[in-house]
Length: 388
Ligand code: PSV
Ligand code: MN
Image 1 (tube, helix red, strand yellow):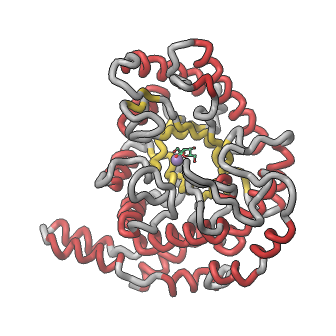
Image 2 (cartoon, rainbow, N blue to C red):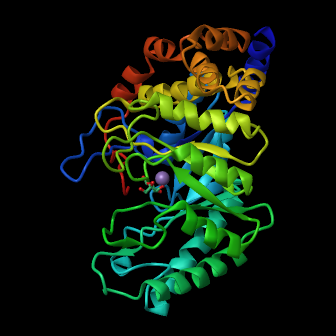
Image 3 (tube, rainbow, N blue to C red):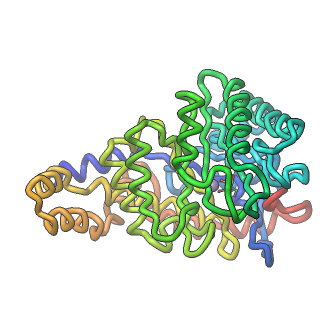
């Protein structure tokens, strides 16, 4: 147990979680966006907010950007600003879903001119990567059809493969594509990358620099997500997570809030495969805080991932393997549940203590007065939002 504990502490000290810039802008549903006082007005202020999360948790040193939501005149300046704040730019997300031309598709569109435009957008994103030092190009393909017969499903796959090939050819050797999937929305008959299998098929055709990104909110209810994690890890193609929590659709709620046990099961497979550190898996959040304050919402999310990881690190793998080998069904299950039932908060408090951090990041941020300060100071201008 002492060995497990010290091993867990060492691994937790190295763990990193990437924050999404859009978590710090206003967001909502198609019914209403609720503005909040003090919300960031530009990408520079979003980075300042993200840096607060890192300051109090110590595990969130990178921020993903979304283009064009985070377009600035000088990305070198934005990257330098991030460095000054003690963070760095992470994945660059392309956007293929907010342009009238993309109504019937982007990388899959029947019109070569629209496809060319969608490919060119990735050239722009790759340029942003060069200027910010980012190595991950995240592509979520919002393409799909609403009605049977609306378009030729196979032709769309062929066009997609061709477009992706063009994007892939533009990558620098240090860069990779993270290809996301989603089973429905914004189209409801057939998405063009609805599942991990389709994403993987395209990644395999592209080459080693293409990996799958698993958004935990993008599956049908009841899907065994940890099984997908296992398969992608076996093939060396799990590039990243977009962590969030869902009850019904793509809810983008705080990771681990609805089903902390699912998050534990996912992290358990990561730890079992020794993929927590140095295995090329980028642990990102993809969330929106519609009704709760954003910086505390991100802190809570980071803590949830950290707690699930700590529990996974405490699984007695020797005892588990022995019970599995013996066919001891309940014994093996019990080993897993023992780890899940452990209160890891004291362990994490000890970790933070050793790092010079407050043992309770959430309370420390609340006490800092930062939230009140930004509410006071960030007046005027246009608050950032989903799409701005
Ligand atoms: C799409 O639902 C998605 O999960 C993609 O990752 C987008 O980039 C992100 O959400 C935007 O919030
Ligand atoms: Mn996502």
